[in-house]
Image 1 (cartoon, rainbow, N blue to C red):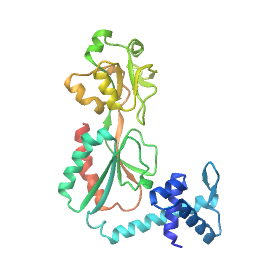
Image 2: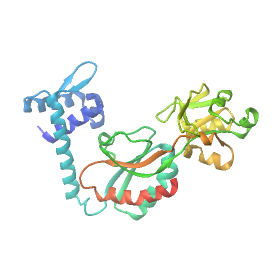
Image 3: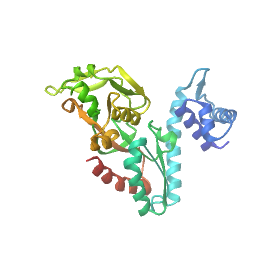
Image 4: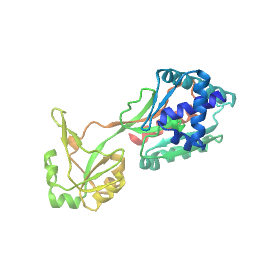
Length: 299
């Protein structure tokens, strides 16, 4: 039995909660995954996973062993990177993830300039509007917009992002410019469904800074912020998005900001990586290269 492989499979199964998901990612039959974990349990003389028709759960022994397996796998990976020279020379593949539109507008130019300077580093840029599990997805660095709940991650704040409300000049001419949150009830609204969607629109009282909530009744609901912005340009309704998502339309005058005095505090934008020991040089070089450039963009 390959003990390290079995440890890795246990980690994948625990993170994904599924034998089948692990099998797909590893490119092996589900039965093979199950057999290798069973072999590990037999070698240890302990049950690590309780399997039911609905879910997988770790036993007490499994929880303890999983924590040790993570440390061992991390140590082995760092030893391999050190042997390959990643701690002495910036080289190898760097996996970075970012939200789709923000990544296209702001991260991709930084990556392109970075590749010009570091010929021995290759980048795989994952543009996704969902947060990838960094350990499970083998992601080195992520751009996150919003508060970070995972304490196992190290974050470098590169700026902040406004949450804005916008509408077309024609819509505002027809309905009037709202001067308070309650007035939004007289305007059609556009909402979008997705990881960054907002079922309730949050504002802040301009005097007390107390939170104000407005639940829109959408005239149109779409699946992306980009579609919401396009619909707002056409005068369908008011859209609430992150500032960068509407920046071009605002700059060109196709959209106008409304209720700016009631905006909530901006949310942080961070470069995030997994907290572990010594950072490979490819990651350190990218962090040092990207952070000031993204700060300039966000400023």
